[in-house]
Length: 477
Ligand SMILES: Nc1nc2c(ncn2[C@@H]2O[C@H](COP(=O)(O)OP(=O)(O)OP(=O)(O)O)[C@@H](O)[C@H]2O)c(=O)[nH]1
Ligand SMILES: [Mg+2]
Image 1 (cartoon, protein in one colour):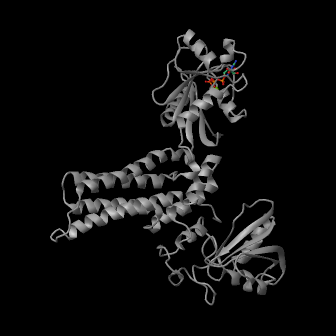
Image 2: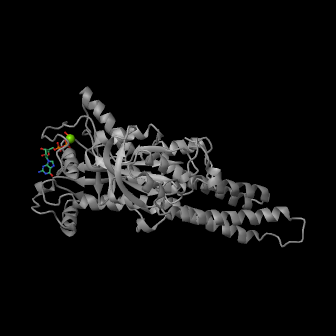
Image 3: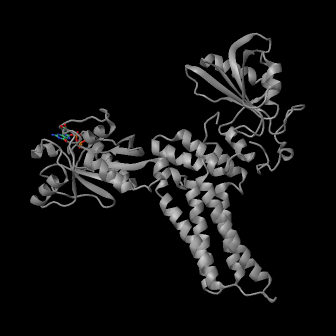
């Protein structure tokens, strides 16, 4: 990690790390890594980025002259050779000249055949002239070289790690800079507010029109309203990163493991007619209409003297508490008693009630009315589409904002917490103003609100924060 972690304003100030002597470009020392997965594939790719990256690769390339003279974004075919000029592989070098590359530095992306031994050999040879990139270091450089703001850099990682289509959409929207644009607009408005109150402090003794407090208050309130909107939209964003936690619970034998398997479309959990089959909980990830769901199968809740089963039931209680939604299963003939908190009551095995097809809404409501039940969802793992009512109900509980791809939307816990702190500071500013305390205090709170927003964008950042963010990236990104 480079020592000074401020954003580089121009190329001359970007001489950090240990730039190669005599290189044609300025910037950080060159680094390299394999940027594709290390398995057998048609093609693999390595990236070398930094000061002197082009000269460095040219030293091992049969078409060195062509490479050194080529314009940016040119692909050149040739032979990669070791130090003794022995051919290692036929490769294509794609050349990017600073600042027109992912990192903003001179970069070569080298495509070779996708044999892991070959890729490792090329990497080892390159490591004779540069060092291995740390996880996330290419993206860190893109950030330090002003190619991405921090929200976009973090979105790169989210996009790589996204496990479902909606998570990808949200990360892509962030990468496009929707969130950054929204935050910058909020920051501009906060700065304008702060400047007008600072002006009122500085010129109190002069003949300037006094601050219109009512108008000023309205301005702060409108900024707060927009922050609140962004916050409440985004508090759902955690779901896209971490998944919505859905727990199957209920008495033994009601079919929790069967429903779990039906969601997974595989026989993951053991199913048997003996009550008490599931002892420990099971956890799996699924995608429901593009949404990441973490689904738990748990031990049936009942009074028991069995030590292992008791431990299983204790674990069930913990999962119930930390879940976003509990599907509390009952079977026909069973009374409803369900846990506190966010839950849906589900009657499983409705095929045993004589339904030969999954009932439509009115048929089911008729059954509920006849049997004095309210708010119970039908389910069966035997009937075709027997989970449809359940899936619909789960999705409506998650209720994500529409048009995710066009919206500024926070999915990152760090961003959400900073936005919340900014809201708190702004609320304090409004309170301070309303109580008639000095304008200095209001200005102070506004500065604090701005600095929280700036920390999301990385306008102000420190080494510890950047380490924390980029360490979670994979090598090669
Ligand atoms: N007819 C019918 N039988 C079902 C249905 N779902 C589950 N069963 C049967 O009910 C029995 C119990 O199912 P499980 O999935 O093991 O139930 P469980 O709630 O996980 O049970 P424990 O792990 O013991 O708490 C098995 O014989 C299943 O085949 C259903 O929708 N219809
Ligand atoms: Mg079970």
